[in-house]
Image 1 (cartoon, protein in one colour):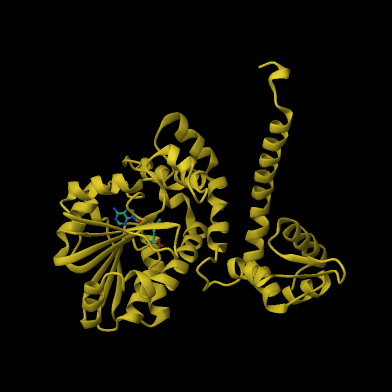
Image 2 (image 1 turned 45 degrees about the vertical axis):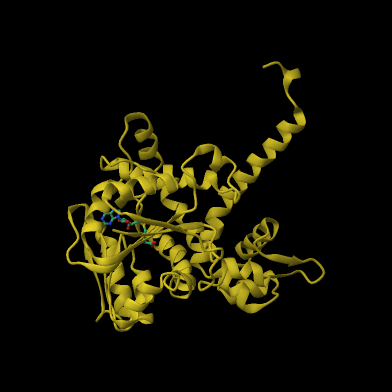
Length: 359
Ligand SMILES: C[S@@+](CC[C@H](N)C(=O)[O-])C[C@H]1O[C@@H](n2cnc3c(N)ncnc32)[C@H](O)[C@@H]1O
């Protein structure tokens, strides 16, 4: 392309978009340190502080504290008042970065990226040779980050909105029903349900042993381990028992082999039972994701390449990918023999789409 063909305004505009991305990458370690050392929560709890006061409160070196505060202020994660030379978090900043109970607490998602970099050689090799990066290469930081990310949805919506949207399911759980959460991860969803529905019993299945160990520990700590248990189980081999409600939260697109898994879920439903599905709010179509109203298309495909598709391909799976979309879910459900398929949207949660399935 000749130089004259270049629109230099467009080049500059694009170059600064890339600089923004470089900045976002560089901020990742700072957010992670901030999370690890409680820097966001310290600032949110304290009100306006000088860097020296902040360092003292946080128990860190002042020079590091000042550089961290400066970076965060320039990045818009915290707020700086030049007149007083003090830093603080607005309620909105704290809601997203310093309040683990808030529905938009995103620190878990921010700190999950560490293994993406650690796995970069494996990922590049998979691009060339096929295969993928196995699930166990992502480690504790990734899974605990994901747990904190999904917990916010469960904590704020599961009992308040999702279950009440299915009145027959809610009634069953009140009277004493049985629930299986497939791909339960670290188990937070069932702990929240168990507290809300004390007559019911709950079992979580996951093929990843580290998740099951964490989930059982969480249930014990929450005091619900008499009614909630978690077991290592690859559900493509079948699901022990039958249930009134089976759930998968952000699992179907991750499953290496979703077809036999959905077959097993259908077989494990009691008559009249419900299969409730949460997936990310993506389309199955690239152009629609490029034009996604929330601007999250690249988030979906990059999460997929870094983890979702890749860990499935690592074990010879389908590699469905994060941007599975409704049409694919309908296809899988029909193949498994579900005849009732209802999509549900909850305006309070634009990030996810939900499906209610019955046989
Ligand atoms: C993205 S995580 C979601 C975890 C949890 N539901 C949450 O929202 O926090 C997907 C989980 O599905 C599990 N999984 C994938 N395929 C599975 C299978 N065939 N049987 C059981 N669990 C499976 C993975 O081990 C992983 O823990």
